[in-house]
Length: 215
Image (tube, rainbow, N blue to C red; front, side, top):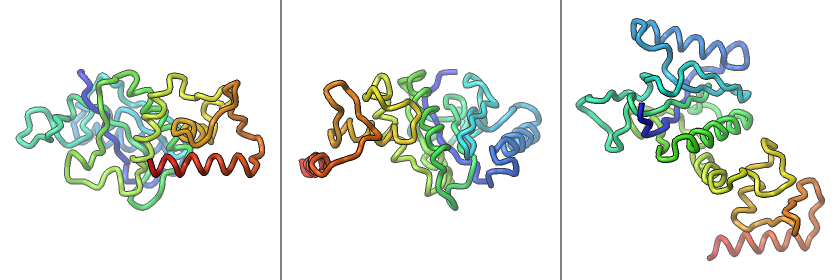
C-alpha cells in the first residue's frame, strides 16, 4: 500500500472501564468485523489510550475503513486521500468534550514523529478535513502537534540539549524554546533544566521572545 497521508481521529467515546482504553480497542474491533462481515479487523491502524498506551490492531500495510472515502467513490477529496492510501492514527476519548491528557499527547507525538520518518512524503490530515464530521474533536491539539512535530523532525536527535532526557515531560517545551532562540544552552550544550533562574537570565529570555515576535 502506497502511503499518501496519516489521518488523525478520535474514538468519540469514553476512555473505557479498564483505564487504559483496551476495552474500547476491543469493542471497535468487534464492530469493524461485524459491520464489514469479516473483511476488516479494525477501523484504525494505531490507537493511543489516555495514559499513553499504544495499540496496533492493524499493520500499516493493511487497509482500514476509517476515513469514509474509498478509491473510486464519486466523491473524492481534493487531496486524493482515501482508505486505500492512508494510515489511521486514533486517540481514545472524546475531544469535543474533553482535552487530551499530556501522557496521551506525548505518545501521539512520538507515533507521528516515527510515522513521518518512515514515510517522509506523507502528510497529515484531520478526519474532518476529508468528510463531514467533527472528528477528531474541537479540543484535539493539532496545532501544537504540527508545531512540535516539525521541531522534532528538524532536530535529528529530538533533543538538542545533552542533558534533557528523551521523553521527559519538559522535553518539548525546552526544544521549542531553544529552536526559537528564546532560551539557550551553555557552551557545553547543556540546558541545566533543574537549575534556578536568576533575573538576568529571565530578562535575556524575555528579550529573545519579544524580538522573535516583533521581527
